[in-house]
Structure formats: structure tokens, C-alpha cells
Length: 381
Ligand SMILES: C[S@@+](CC[C@H](N)C(=O)[O-])C[C@H]1O[C@@H](n2cnc3c(N)ncnc32)[C@H](O)[C@@H]1O
Picture 1 (cartoon, rainbow, N blue to C red):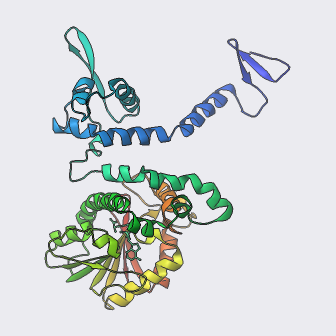
Picture 2: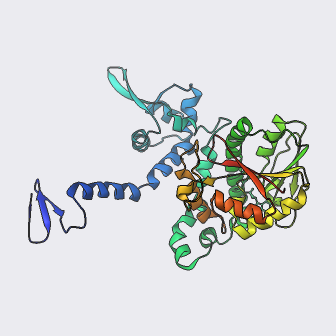
Picture 3: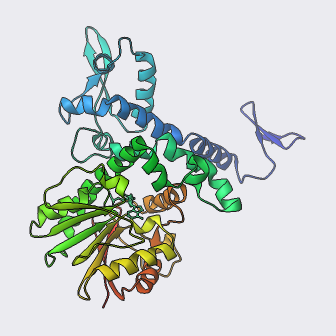
């Protein structure tokens, strides 16, 4: 390799910039590959969204967990007269490379055809299964929820709420005015509640002693219904904004109550709050916690289900947590809070301790569960 007068190094006839900015040619090319990955990071989510909307994981799953389908068989299952098979082939080829579908070759009429199966990732994207991440994927990749991400630079420069900048209203009032978005959001929450409740009920023993429980911000009531199903002696109350409980189905052992947790919280032995605190800033969390404290007896508790950020992702003073789910997802969720909430954030243990104390809860335990979130059980005394 030799250099010319413009600071370009010649290698195999190609000219590569050699101004000393990169340490080596290898580093320069590796960096370029990473930058391409960042440039097109959205392609994976949106190609997956496409196949989930088309119901392709469901088509394969209907044939069995280890079944495979050819492109022709998939296309024959699509609801339109003449689908664009070549376009679908290109999308599937990309998703095979990304590990979303496995592809195998099988001989058919003296030719080979590609057959697509399910990987562990696409098994989670089957819409028709009780435990599915498809509704969450569809909600997080909806135009309404993606639009705020385009406003992060303005949020840094001038502050403000990304969701409001993109959609003209904060998320809960937007949901109340847009029934389709309200359903999309509530279904995503319900799908996550089913998954996380399984993890909670397998590891957390703190429901035994309760006769009544309010799920504050409980959405359409999936979580409290699961608790009551496991502990039928508990009287469950699902408490959420009126436009949310108005769409909830009736659930055995659960009473739906509409209201505002900043005003008041129904009384019970304990309060359950999953994915509520992370939506709010510290001052708002303290207000909600104070209302929870008023709603329970001195012997009561709040059971919070939320991410506890690893110390390394926070301020380095908390102990390192051992999580079942890659802790980096916690920091992604922190950005989801920048996109969708009005001041919410994920918190380290030290940050949790501060708001719990100020909210009237002097003692707490953190219980790890096989999920992204942990259970934080907090007591007034
Ligand atoms: C992130 S979702 C969590 C839903 C549910 N807890 C779950 O994890 O599946 C937050 C919930 O808080 C509710 N919420 C927002 N503001 C509220 C308020 N002021 N009072 C009661 N609920 C509220 C929303 O309607 C939404 O259902």
C-alpha cells in the first residue's frame, strides 16, 4: 500500500481515506459497516411488522411448531387475488438473514424450493397464541408511536414532550380521542401483562395474605384477572382512566373502576402497579405513591412491576442485578419513555429508593422475576 498526495492509500486499486482519522484500514471499514447497520436499523422492525400484519408466523404455526411452508404455500394463504410473491420473497430473504425465519431447501419436481419455518423469535410473533409479543411489536411500530422518535433532537435542544410534538397531544389524551390507537395500545399492554404475570406468579409469593387488591393503571384488567385466577379469594379492582375501562370486557372476580390516580385511588389491602411509575417524572410518581399510601392500611403494601436499571447503566452506586432479559432492553425502554411519556424514565435502585421514601414507603424488597421488569414490594412501615 502506498499513499498519494491527497492522503489516500491505494489498496488493490481502491483508494481509501488515510488522513489519520481512523487507526487502520480495518477499523475504517468495520466502522463503515457499523454505520450502515445504524442507518438501516429500522429495516428489521418494519420488515417484521410486515410479516406479522400478513400473519405469516401464524400460517406456519398452524401447521405445527416445526412445520415449514414454501413461498407458494404462503402466497396461496394471503387474502388478495394476485399478491406480489417476488416482493414477499425479498422480505423473507432479509428476515432469514436476520434469524427471524429459518430457511431450508427441499427437492420438489426435480427443482429445489425454499421452505420457511419458525425460530424462537418468530414463535413469539404468532398472533393467535395466548402468549404473543405481536401486539406489542405492532403498537411500538405504529406510525403514531414511531413519529415521536423523530423529535428527539428538539427534545434535547428545547425540552418538551416528543409524543406531543409529533401527535399534538400527550399520549393518554391522544388515546382517549383516537379509539383505534386506544385499542392498539391497550392490546399491546394486555399481551405484555399476560407474559409478565406468568413470570410474577411463578416467583412472587406476596399475594397470599391479601383479601383485596387494586391494579392502578391496570389497562383493560388482564393483570389483575390473572392474579384473581391464581388467588380466587382476592377481590380485584381494575382502576384506569374512564376511556380505558370503558373498552374492558367483564372479567371474573374483577370490578372495573374509572378514575384518575392523581386525584384518588380506591381502597384495598394492597396496590399493584405494573408499568405505571416509569411513565412519570419523580414528582408525579411521589403524588401517585402518596395517593396509594392513603388507599391502604398501615399493614398494606404497593407491589410495583417495573424495570430496575442495572447500576452500570445508572450511576454506578447500586449493586449489579442479574436479569433474565438482556439489561440493554431496559435502556431501550428508557428511550421509549422519552418517545411516549411526559417525563417518565426507567430507574436504578437508588432512584427507586428516593421516590418510594418520599411517597411514604420506608421499606422495600426487590424480587427478580424471569422478565424484563422486577417486582418492587414497598411497605409504609
Ligand atoms: C403503560 S400502561 C400500563 C398498563 C398496565 N398496567 C400494564 O402493564 O399492562 C399505563 C396505564 O396507565 C393508565 N393511566 C394513565 N394516566 C392515568 C391516570 N391519571 N389515572 C389512572 N390511570 C392512568 C393508562 O391509561 C394506561 O392504561
